[in-house]
Image (cartoon, rainbow, N blue to C red; front, side):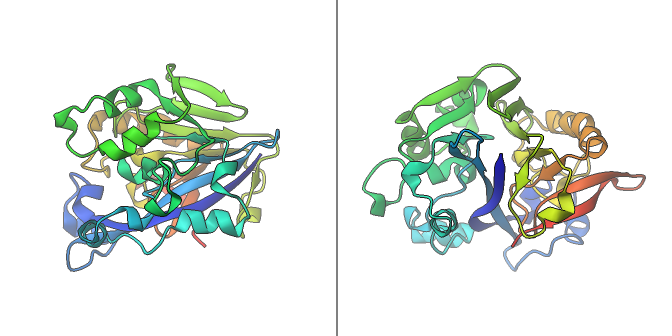
Length: 293
């Protein structure tokens, strides 16, 4: 299995929303906000090449900037262009060569890349991909529940409906060879972490040698979006089940440190991921950082 972390999108988010209950004087020591109180964000995805030749993605980011209005681009600091498409082109991978997409959840900044920009003249960016998502996430995403506000834009969900979808029912399941979906709840009811495991896992990154011997990667999604969200209460205000996020951290962060799992962050503009160690003051701290390149 070959795994390449990629930057799918760049944008900005209100700093307070990324740290929830944590006061600004505390979180701003870690990340400096701009004049609008926004902090830089990435949408990271994983390019996965299975031993049988199939190629897939874990998440798709926000999508092409051209999909959004000028007002939306300015509000979210989106763009320019579409970094995911550029990254795939650089590796000579065409959108119709993507065989599968595994979603942590279906918010606009994770599933928006599935919606093709106008220049594609079709509904879906990756028309031949089979989609994998937890059934509870799909149920909420398609419910049009007004209590979920703008979490699931109709145009994003409607494009997903047009593809082959595998809805995953168990809370823990190997959905493809070496690819496990673990429902975390927390951020959303059906939010999942994606664990990749292989005895000869090949991480494609200039600093991959620093992580030789690692046989498991875990993309935690938005229950731990950056290296600054490791502490129990450093969680986003978008979490619909906040106590479940803390339960996930309590249960999984010790396992990540103990088993030398490379924890991958989906929104950190400085790091794709890190291995962890227990820390008496911070609960858990970064041991080795996998920087963005």
